[in-house]
Length: 414
Image (tube, rainbow, N blue to C red):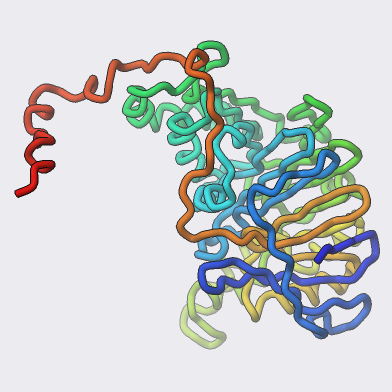
């Protein structure tokens, strides 16, 4: 079932369900002006099968992590953007998302360009997995990291990349008894970091092959957060990362095809869900006060997101960084609808959006909970660089090797 979403079409709310190990999406309601946006018929989203070819004129956005809170159904933040010209880009790479990339059949060689909105753990934590295991699979070239500067050079993206490499030095050496790079093209354990001035509006982060990715300031927690805008083939996408509602977004996201923007539940909901407390309980006021302080410092309330959408008028508005539950999605959509009447979706993991000039199609990926690594890119042997170490035993001392149980002991039938 295709979803054709021109400007001003009906609102559809997505809720993710896990049923029998398979992921589905459900729309709750389809309406244009009702004051109760969750009324109406319930219908399943069409299934997306990983590996489906992408049309030459399309952009595909796959949501791999849609929460700040690690959950089985919603890992932390990441989206994967594929273009019909063969390019692909990762935006943020938070805790737990590696399993979603594996399940979606995306090999590390297609994840070599990562754009970070800021350096909070729920946006960068799984870079350890991507960096460490990419070269032992099919990413034999450097990992390119793009991200914001900071007021202190020791806290910006370049310093982060240097420290990531130092942190995982033991792992890098341990895996270097196999080839990890190419004779011409660098090594998979190289990191090339490009630091983007966080206060620059419309600065160019990346431009090649007809693709332009720009950045602009986000207002989140402390100095040093940014949002991104990708443009290609007359199509556009904005990814906010975490931010307070701000005028930079209103200016930069006007009329984009897809606006992906964070949203947070009200402080009272946050306090109740994360503590189990309720009004009148000891500690309730402190829990609400804490949640309020964090949100005032860092995030976009539900009604504020509706305002942002109303000022930018995207073809499809997407809320993310939001905990999808039966009792959170309805109130959130009501708040959004107080300002915005256009098409909107609340994302959960494995939502897939195909974007063309004529339509926007929404589906949910059907994946295995027990997926193995995807089919890798295969390099001709003469292109591969020799391993750093000669064989699998090169980094083990004689005492350790002398205590290895010989194969003939356990391979012989008793």
